[in-house]
Length: 271
Ligand SMILES: C[S@@+](CC[C@H](N)C(=O)[O-])C[C@H]1O[C@@H](n2cnc3c(N)ncnc32)[C@H](O)[C@@H]1O
Image (cartoon, rainbow, N blue to C red):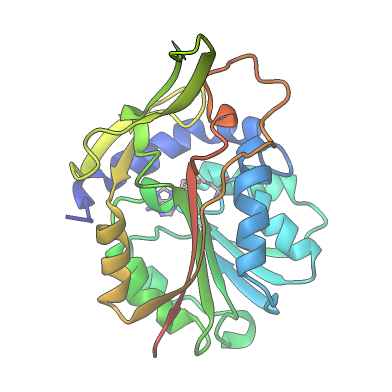
């Protein structure tokens, strides 16, 4: 199952409560994760830049501002009024069209169009599909808002390695037969196929837990494939040697250069 309609209200209510905290942790340009893992690869997969773009679940507008700064005419949407208020307050001087849009609402999605009613040249959704209770409406309706062949680029917590609150990071030290100490770090995966609703936080200190909707790679992509989308770009970024230099912890994603906590994908609708 990929859709959990009974949890949509709960999810949106959590993001209303978390909007101020999220805005503070994201700042103008996104946090360490967004700046290192999400935005560069999303931007790469969006090339060549379209003249118009639709953003789904824009949060505090961190990516919308970047696109607008590059001359793209952006319509940025989110299901949370509080997120949009913060986004607008941070974006004075940017020409961005802000719309409250519940991405599970088929009729609201059907009403979307770019400037003067023209279809958008691209759609983007950063780090949000795992927070959205129903994804079928989006994959069904987005083609109506997009120009023929236009890309939909999305990033998510990597469903295979970073599957929500149950993820367990480890560091282990062992001794080799010839007496050397070896330190290995990694992720212990359990329950990958046990998809469904979990609860957790996106950052330490977040006021309210949010529901996460864990979908396997097959569930996520088959939802899109069954609706006429094809995958034509993919990135699996890890921090590599770009970990947070201020990180105190040796048990963090910053210290796992070989494991991607994020998946970025580009899809196009066959029309
Ligand atoms: C983790 S935040 C990501 C925000 C932003 N894209 C970023 O990268 O910083 C998840 C976002 O999904 C939004 N969201 C959750 N459910 C939604 C829904 N049904 N429709 C639209 N937005 C939703 C939340 O309000 C929140 O802004």
